[in-house]
Image (cartoon, rainbow, N blue to C red; front, side, top):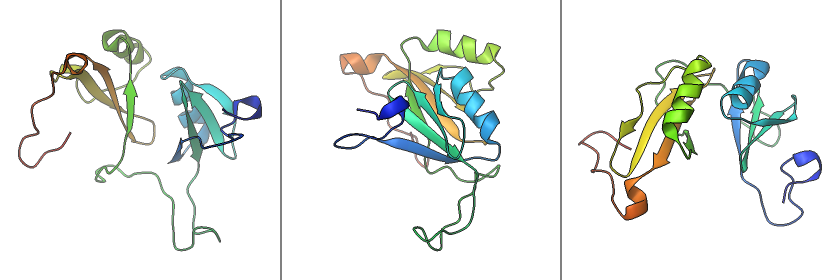
Length: 153
Protein backbone atom coordinates (compact mmCIF):
# COMPACT_ATOMS: atom_id res chain seq x y z
CA UNK A 1 0.00 0.00 0.00
CA UNK A 2 2.89 2.47 0.50
CA UNK A 3 3.96 4.64 -2.38
CA UNK A 4 7.22 4.74 -4.25
CA UNK A 5 10.35 4.25 -2.16
CA UNK A 6 8.35 2.98 0.80
CA UNK A 7 6.94 6.43 1.62
CA UNK A 8 3.50 6.25 3.27
CA UNK A 9 1.46 7.50 0.30
CA UNK A 10 -1.32 5.02 -0.48
CA UNK A 11 -2.74 4.58 -3.97
CA UNK A 12 -6.14 4.06 -2.30
CA UNK A 13 -7.55 4.09 1.20
CA UNK A 14 -5.30 5.36 3.95
CA UNK A 15 -2.10 4.69 5.85
CA UNK A 16 -1.73 5.68 9.48
CA UNK A 17 1.55 7.30 10.52
CA UNK A 18 2.66 8.86 13.79
CA UNK A 19 4.23 12.35 13.81
CA UNK A 20 6.71 13.27 16.54
CA UNK A 21 7.95 16.79 17.19
CA UNK A 22 11.65 16.33 18.00
CA UNK A 23 14.59 18.41 19.21
CA UNK A 24 17.25 16.59 17.16
CA UNK A 25 16.01 14.89 13.99
CA UNK A 26 19.16 12.79 13.48
CA UNK A 27 19.21 11.50 17.08
CA UNK A 28 15.51 10.59 16.97
CA UNK A 29 15.78 9.01 13.54
CA UNK A 30 18.76 6.92 14.70
CA UNK A 31 16.87 5.77 17.81
CA UNK A 32 13.95 4.42 15.79
CA UNK A 33 16.33 2.72 13.36
CA UNK A 34 18.73 1.26 15.95
CA UNK A 35 16.31 0.31 18.72
CA UNK A 36 13.13 -0.57 16.81
CA UNK A 37 14.79 -1.83 13.63
CA UNK A 38 13.33 0.90 11.45
CA UNK A 39 14.26 1.70 7.88
CA UNK A 40 14.93 5.30 6.85
CA UNK A 41 12.56 6.28 4.06
CA UNK A 42 13.42 10.00 4.13
CA UNK A 43 16.40 11.50 5.99
CA UNK A 44 14.65 14.75 6.95
CA UNK A 45 12.12 17.45 6.07
CA UNK A 46 10.38 15.43 7.44
CA UNK A 47 12.45 12.45 8.57
CA UNK A 48 10.41 9.33 7.92
CA UNK A 49 11.24 5.90 9.32
CA UNK A 50 9.30 2.74 8.48
CA UNK A 51 9.04 0.58 11.60
CA UNK A 52 7.48 -2.83 10.98
CA UNK A 53 4.08 -2.03 9.44
CA UNK A 54 4.00 1.65 10.48
CA UNK A 55 5.78 4.90 9.82
CA UNK A 56 7.12 7.49 12.22
CA UNK A 57 7.55 11.02 10.93
CA UNK A 58 9.89 13.37 12.81
CA UNK A 59 10.37 17.11 12.41
CA UNK A 60 11.39 20.01 14.64
CA UNK A 61 8.68 22.02 16.32
CA UNK A 62 7.45 25.36 15.19
CA UNK A 63 4.71 27.90 15.21
CA UNK A 64 1.40 28.05 13.42
CA UNK A 65 1.13 27.46 9.69
CA UNK A 66 -1.76 28.38 7.38
CA UNK A 67 -3.18 24.85 7.62
CA UNK A 68 -2.91 24.69 11.43
CA UNK A 69 -3.46 28.21 12.72
CA UNK A 70 -2.98 28.77 16.46
CA UNK A 71 -1.11 25.45 16.82
CA UNK A 72 2.47 25.32 18.17
CA UNK A 73 4.38 22.05 17.94
CA UNK A 74 6.94 21.27 20.65
CA UNK A 75 8.47 18.07 22.05
CA UNK A 76 7.50 17.12 25.60
CA UNK A 77 9.31 18.65 28.56
CA UNK A 78 10.32 16.54 31.56
CA UNK A 79 7.39 16.21 33.94
CA UNK A 80 4.75 16.93 31.28
CA UNK A 81 1.64 14.78 31.63
CA UNK A 82 1.48 11.98 29.06
CA UNK A 83 -1.57 11.88 26.83
CA UNK A 84 -0.32 9.60 24.06
CA UNK A 85 2.38 7.00 23.58
CA UNK A 86 3.56 4.42 21.10
CA UNK A 87 2.56 0.84 21.82
CA UNK A 88 5.01 -1.70 20.40
CA UNK A 89 4.21 -5.40 20.42
CA UNK A 90 7.12 -7.83 20.24
CA UNK A 91 7.36 -11.61 19.90
CA UNK A 92 9.99 -11.96 22.65
CA UNK A 93 10.07 -9.15 25.20
CA UNK A 94 13.08 -10.54 27.07
CA UNK A 95 15.18 -10.58 23.89
CA UNK A 96 13.99 -7.07 22.94
CA UNK A 97 14.69 -5.74 26.44
CA UNK A 98 18.21 -7.23 26.54
CA UNK A 99 19.04 -5.90 23.06
CA UNK A 100 17.71 -2.41 23.79
CA UNK A 101 19.51 -2.28 27.17
CA UNK A 102 22.75 -3.25 25.39
CA UNK A 103 22.20 -0.26 23.07
CA UNK A 104 21.91 2.08 26.07
CA UNK A 105 18.13 2.38 26.29
CA UNK A 106 16.87 3.14 29.78
CA UNK A 107 13.59 1.56 30.82
CA UNK A 108 11.28 2.76 33.59
CA UNK A 109 11.20 -0.84 34.94
CA UNK A 110 12.18 -4.29 33.77
CA UNK A 111 9.45 -6.24 31.92
CA UNK A 112 6.61 -6.95 34.37
CA UNK A 113 4.02 -9.71 34.09
CA UNK A 114 0.56 -8.10 34.05
CA UNK A 115 -1.31 -11.41 33.46
CA UNK A 116 -2.58 -10.41 30.00
CA UNK A 117 0.87 -9.40 28.84
CA UNK A 118 4.43 -8.78 29.89
CA UNK A 119 5.34 -5.14 29.39
CA UNK A 120 7.71 -2.34 30.21
CA UNK A 121 8.20 1.27 29.16
CA UNK A 122 11.09 3.25 27.72
CA UNK A 123 11.50 6.79 26.42
CA UNK A 124 12.93 8.00 23.14
CA UNK A 125 15.54 10.82 22.97
CA UNK A 126 12.82 13.48 23.29
CA UNK A 127 11.11 11.81 26.22
CA UNK A 128 8.21 10.27 24.32
CA UNK A 129 6.90 7.25 26.20
CA UNK A 130 6.99 3.88 24.42
CA UNK A 131 5.26 0.80 25.80
CA UNK A 132 6.85 -2.50 24.80
CA UNK A 133 4.76 -5.58 25.40
CA UNK A 134 4.36 -9.22 24.62
CA UNK A 135 0.87 -10.72 24.69
CA UNK A 136 0.71 -13.73 26.99
CA UNK A 137 -2.47 -14.43 28.99
CA UNK A 138 -4.49 -12.22 26.64
CA UNK A 139 -4.03 -14.89 23.99
CA UNK A 140 -5.86 -17.29 26.33
CA UNK A 141 -8.57 -14.85 27.44
CA UNK A 142 -6.79 -13.77 30.62
CA UNK A 143 -6.95 -10.03 31.22
CA UNK A 144 -4.96 -7.72 33.46
CA UNK A 145 -6.30 -6.68 36.82
CA UNK A 146 -8.23 -3.39 36.70
CA UNK A 147 -6.03 -0.35 37.40
CA UNK A 148 -5.78 0.83 40.97
CA UNK A 149 -7.96 3.84 41.78
CA UNK A 150 -6.41 6.97 40.28
CA UNK A 151 -4.05 5.16 37.86
CA UNK A 152 -4.42 4.05 34.29
CA UNK A 153 -3.16 1.42 31.87
